[in-house]
Image: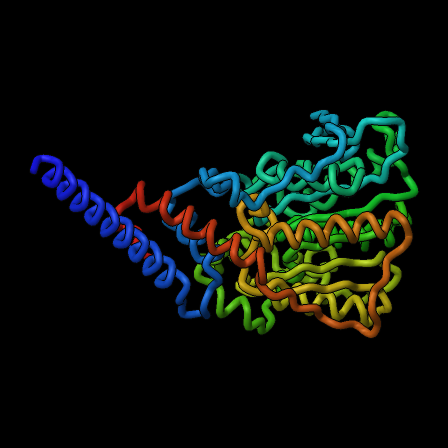
Length: 396
């Protein structure tokens, strides 16, 4: 009799537990479904979860989310441990010094050099060499290159052309001091994201105009390419800031970095409208579907091609501005980082194979096993967030 009673209690507890698990599963599934449906289009589950977490301040922007290792999207890049060095270098006739961070492989080299320019709207407090450390470290490991992150001066204290002059001075410094870090001055590339993408391509124009170092390749990740007022559909559609870049920030950047309208006309701020883009190095231009800067990045890629510059352009569907920085939790970020690394390696080996005439490639969201992994991670992250926020999880 007592044994039957115990069995009955166990059965009830099992049913209660099963019901709670079912309710939790439904809660997570409904939450993700709600986040996926936006006025601008339906988002993949992982993008929706990540954006919800960031925009509701549930996790810091670096997404330090604890998820099971079995579903972790990051990878170390492998290879030998890197050497790191933080320095200050002179700019502006040696009257000013700016910080740089060097990651380089071990060994004698000489290794190719990649000058990296961080994003952050050209503004103090929005980005620096620390906020983009994960990208620069990975690029060094994945391309077997010396990567130099440049801490150019920022607005509002330092307006255009301070950031440009600092960035170019860093290239000249790297060329003059390559022997100290086993760098190869015959293979210098530039790379950057967002505002840094603007600076990276401007470096190729400036180096051409000043007969400076010959740049091997340029990698532009969701770059800002114009400060001028021209119709750009993506700027209108994705201007709310929900996709990690807002119209208000873009206007603030323009007002503080280029406070005089005449500055907007310069090819060194608005390369999209530059009169001459000939003679520039091969370019990789990466854009994101849900990004206010999407259209101008793609327009710039097309315009480079019109000047017979080799261009590889890829739009990644289902992701937002800055997605490559989130490669540790987003598989599409991994795809982007892989494309960037492969492009730099091929450029250094003089083995780029770029299809002509110009064609924009559209990369679909993860499929197959990667899609299953993304869905699993989305549930794991949503469960983590639910444990922290409860019913507030439903709000966008």
